[in-house]
Length: 188
Image 1 (cartoon, one colour):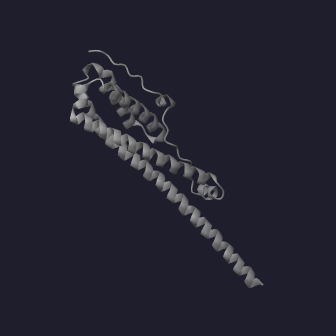
Image 2 (cartoon, helix red, strand yellow):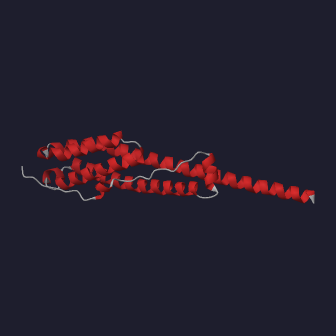
Image 3 (tube, one colour):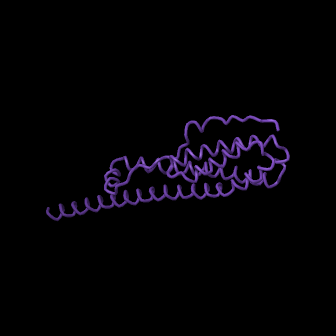
């Protein structure tokens, strides 16, 4: 009888330890996926950040009286560079997207600019980066959401508390940045 109780006790310890190890490894995997997803967003933001001065330079000669739009793009780019964390980067990202939409809309009024191959290439490259950034944001938010659910669920929350894991911020844009950009065409 003592042998049976000893075997049952060992089996219970093995099962509990196996569950704890599985939960721990799962939480570590989710945490690292979030970090990887954020790093991927940062890489794309850096690439877009590097392309914007070239785009502005190609527009400046054609759009000298649209300086305000170009300045908004540059200011939004600077704000994104200075932002840290998903919330600040989300707000700055929304501002930059709005400024770029306005720039591309105004560029429609400049046939010579639109016909310039360097402008077209830069516009296509930035549009492609915007799409990639949106995809990566979605993956980041999905990873952060899964992680946040796991660390708040029983029994994972026990190990998450022991590991001092805290919820991750979702990548969001400011509500004002969801509105359409007002575009006004001025005559030279």
